[in-house]
Image (cartoon, rainbow, N blue to C red; front, side, top):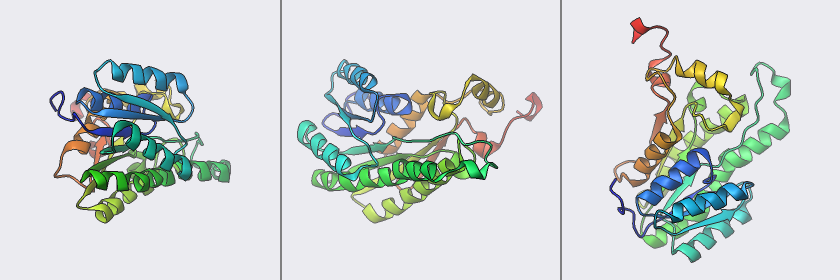
Length: 260
């Protein structure tokens, strides 16, 4: 996408101050969109993100809101529409997890884990779409990109609850795409293991996975952000999920050079 192609558009990125969310925020900014950076705790990171986005010549605002709180979500989207002029793109990137491993340790997967992961990863995304949809309709069109995970398809990840929540979000993506068509498109990106620090993964996990990935490295947050930008701006796509994991899910682990 050429610089300035999204000039006049407004993107909202939840969890937009760090990791994949920040990469997506910057991708939209480089394309010319104004960006609302949602965050829940890291005020410093959000402030730095807004400064970086502003240096690209577009408007930016940081808004603190817990996406699992519907009232805060509605207030956030109303503020974005008022301060930036509308809402055209929503990226549901905010997520929560707690490592509960091994997965066979069922007793450790307590109700507090289940409730929080579902509240943020599933209900939070739904709340954001529901609050954004009227603003998008006022603009005549809109696009939503949900950030799911390969855990949705493989059943892995930091916990069974996390994998189940991302599977639910994948299905919710299709349901929303059908319900909001043709005015609002809804797609998803499913990252694999991305070295951002989310989920408690360490250098050991990253190195072990990269050696078995067909591209022989882990995808980056920036590459995932580029996929989010693509889904948000390609008009012929809705109800789709793009997996960004270096081919590991589709092709399986590469055990030796001979298999490559």
